[in-house]
Structure formats: C-alpha cells, structure tokens
Length: 95
Image 1 (spheres, rainbow, N blue to C red):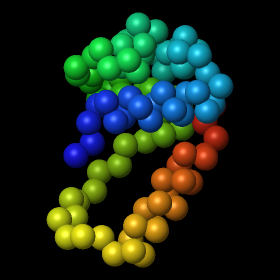
Image 2 (cartoon, one colour):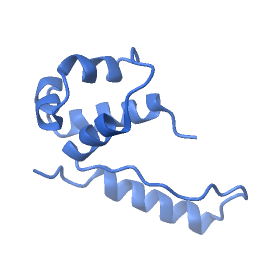
Image 3 (tube, rainbow, N blue to C red):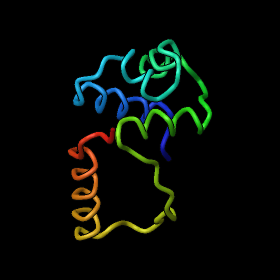
Image 4 (cartoon, rainbow, N blue to C red):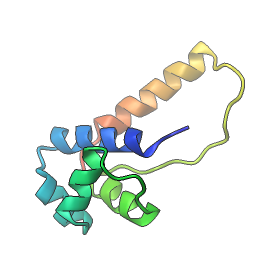
C-alpha cells in the first residue's frame, strides 16, 4: 500500500533533483509553500488528491492505479517495473 509519506519522500527527491526550492515548486503547483513544507516534513496527516496531483504534475509525475498482485512477482516482472521506475525518475519535469 502506498502511503502519503512515501509520496512525500518521492516528491522531495524529485524536487531536489529538478533543482527547485519548495517555494518554486509550490508556485508551479498552485499550493502554499507551508502545505508543501508540511508534506515533505511528514507533518501533514492527509492531503486531498487534487493537491497531491498538482504537485506531482508540476514535477512531471503521475499516480497510477493498478490491480494488486497477490502472487509473488517473477524476476522479469520486477525488472520491467524497475525499468519503468527508472524512466519516471529520470524524466525531465514538464513545463
């Protein structure tokens, strides 16, 4: 299960990789700097989907829904997922 703290960690990592300050990302995402700061520092318990989506979009990221795979993944599946994640992490932010 993906938790808000996991999303926040990825947002922080991607923001820093893009060379953006919190203020710059907040402005691009149309959210307050204090909201972004609270999210990144784990001081926010809940944040609506719209705000999370705005922040992710400003970083060139998106959330993806998929069926839960209750069986153990194969090595090929793990490699494919790893390649997808690497591609997402190294994709330049949209402007």
